[in-house]
Image (cartoon, rainbow, N blue to C red; front, top):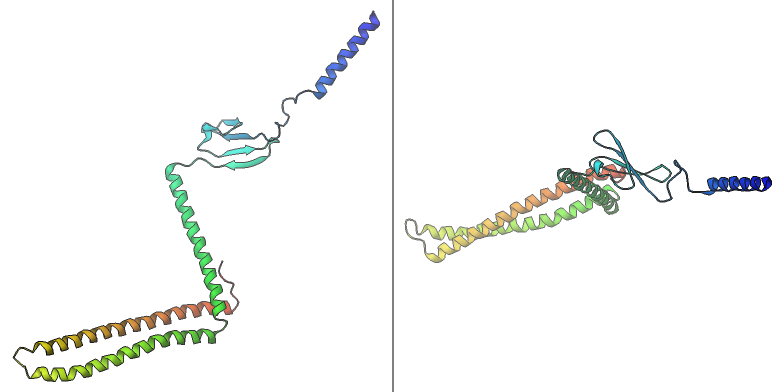
Amino acid sequence: MRTIRFTAGFAGAATFALVVCTGAPAWGQPAPAGRAIYTCTDATGKKQTSDRLIAACSGREQRILNADGSLNRVVPPTLTAEERAQADAREREAAAARDAAREAARRDRNLLARFPNEAAHRKARDAALDNVHKSLRVSEARLVTLANERKPLLAEAEFYAGKPVPAALKAQLEANDASADAQRSLVQNQQLEAARIDKTFDAELDRLKQLWAGAAPRK
């Protein structure tokens, strides 16, 4: 009988040891794979831990940890409506700046492709100005013609000094005046266009000189 009790006791101890070695994880072991841990410090300074976002820390940074305790990512504080509007405005400004930088880089590349040297740029400037100058010469010649056409009309109008000028003559003078005004307006616009072209080519040339000297296109 004693031998049997000893054997049973020994078997029970062995069974207990097997359960301890192969049973559920003890405290302090890593959480099951894939399970996230949320942690933060609330407004009172108390550390909060949960398996989901913590409402008490909605206005504070929350850290999401992996099951082994390593950092997965950081959740920024929830923004107020005003803070969100400010953040959106900053993002729009940043996006506009990025777009402007890309456009500047595109212009630089196009300039280099179109004008490999200063001679090519000067030729393009001359061609652009030549079109304007041709139109300007046409308008100026038309003004001379209108002035010549006006002389006999004025001479005829002198016969009516102190008297009403005939309607037909008056209409001719008014038509001449209107045509001359239109041509003078064209001349002014053409002169402005020539100045604009020169200014544009001057700015291009300044940038091209930098690029030809080895400056990298803007990014």
